[in-house]
Image (cartoon, rainbow, N blue to C red; front, top):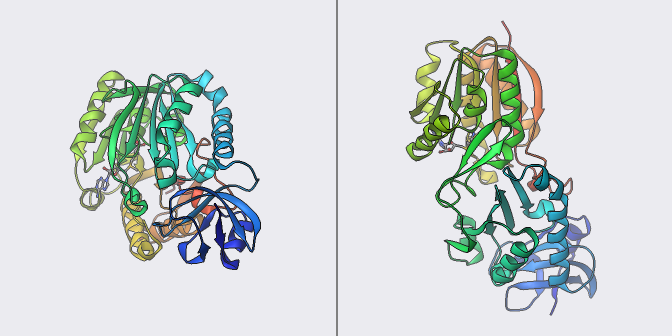
Length: 388
Ligand SMILES: C[S@@+](CC[C@H](N)C(=O)[O-])C[C@H]1O[C@@H](n2cnc3c(N)ncnc32)[C@H](O)[C@@H]1O
């Protein structure tokens, strides 16, 4: 069984971009599965295929072979790349599989202190999820494995949404070691797979910056369970975490206790309203973190998203004392690196403030980015120092 695609689709696969849309499919099997993809009979790639999905073809290998065996090889390679880190930080958190970035489209596997949280986003893999769970358990001997298959994207694949324990135990709330901090993770009820592993290195950086600058007062806006705040609070006089989710803030307070920090407080608020109100007070903080959710989930949202990013950054810039820092992020792939910097320039101009770009970072190294597949890179992160 083979998927035959047109010339337009073939060009994409030859350029090593894995996505081919349904409109480029000429003939294909009726069922989702893992198949060779061809153009005029010539082999191009092995791919996940779903006739029901707009994004019908997602290639995972450009070498020939038995499709499932090659897929398992890719899984082995992804796990091998993290083997050393697993040994070094057994109680830590890491991404073991980053979908297309690891040549495993439709699959995310995150590990939290030996517990696996797996997200399947492709019908072809859903059909093999038991085999997949067995392969992961055999290779990694985890304490537990949870399928967190509740992402909205599954509907486009014609898949149901559910959360299900497939092996061992996965607690409601667990703790991972992140450098000097115990970070909380809620695999079942938390956002994403329970925590935001993509910001791991940036949170460590925030902690190092706070250790050097000893902020009097700090803010963690869109703070979730206080990820950045916990690192900063170890070196600051006081830190406030602002988020719209009281459930996340309750966990942030629990995390402060677990880390023996008495200088972390939380505020349930809409960040837009909070920043607008707070900005009227003028520069009152030495360190501000802004880590908003994606404001542009699709390209069409970009204009509105740019305005929203600019608004929160502009207001946050007004809050930073001279000599203080703004740590600002965007996790929207559609807002590219250049647009992110242009947005910061616009915001600083409107705030009538000058900022020095101290560092530019991205997502953690265990979220690999492929040059050929810009969609694999999405997180932008900048450290700005407020000048006079
Ligand atoms: C990307 S996450 C932050 C992750 C966090 N910095 C960490 O390192 O764990 C974005 C957060 O923004 C919150 N959020 C979304 N919209 C919001 C709004 N309008 N006001 C306040 N918080 C909001 C979400 O509840 C979520 O916790």
